[in-house]
Image 1 (cartoon, one colour):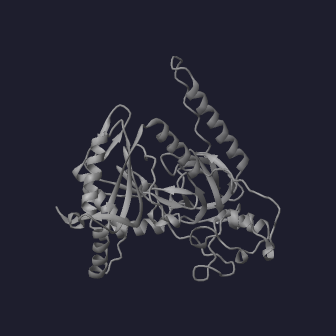
Image 2 (cartoon, rainbow, N blue to C red):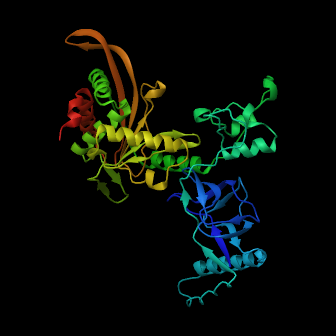
Length: 420
């Protein structure tokens, strides 16, 4: 009996999906748990497993194509079943469903829809798998003998007969991406002609543009900047590493100090919900992370209840999984406050756009050695600038300033991180 597999909704903001790569072809036998395809949502590319058994009778969305959620992704069934009839029946049911939706409320209730024939039924889409991707069979050049390339880059390389072993990767960790294939010049011959390339926005980039535009143009942002003396924080980090053997980062210390400050200032740990403001007792800190195709914000939940070492381990795990496209929708849902750190790139200060519905986000710059005044003397100092972006509909200037003052006091006196 044939079963229709639909394009899944992999996140609450996803409206369309892209089939990055198919791992089965029409006619292949599919077992429960087999990897069918890789689906690109607005957040990440996720591996897609089947929980049905049968023969792959039909592929509804080709690799590289975009389709709305609930479109026919594939049909599984027994060899020889009439695919055309199944598709026609599904089309009729979709038309009937639209007619019911568009019918005026005053009309008589629509007749019950006819049951689909026994040969066809729609089933829930497969769940996204976090299983590792299959190893490449191409010549070994990267990461311990395995070529690391995006599915689209592999497809383009195959079409152009370009050996991946000869292509330098410009993505994270040397990963080969689409632009590397398009810009590849055999033999390293320099091309002096003017050229460019364009690529359509992927699902993640579209949603980033939409959500940040809505936030920037609907939320009245204001900004508060504070300079923090990091001498004591640097000494504390060195002592922690030596005593505990745990390599905590300055960003880990920032997250811990943020959690402590939010606990004292719940007026910043809030969400603007249109006709009301929600003040959160729990503290879930979103950590902005750059990935190849955009930005993800996994969430450290109940951060105020976790040790510095626990926060460090969790953020490291998120970072690895983000680069490997292994984060799930649960990982980035539910933040109450967000931290964005560009200090590792040498950025001194910047402003961030609020991650709605959060009412605030804090931008962290790098630590810079500058002359400072201590005890009426000019001496070398290590200073870090942070900028708090606030939604003025929910957070007032004095509330944001008080939060920043507490945050500064904690980082300048790291022992406060461990006070109850």
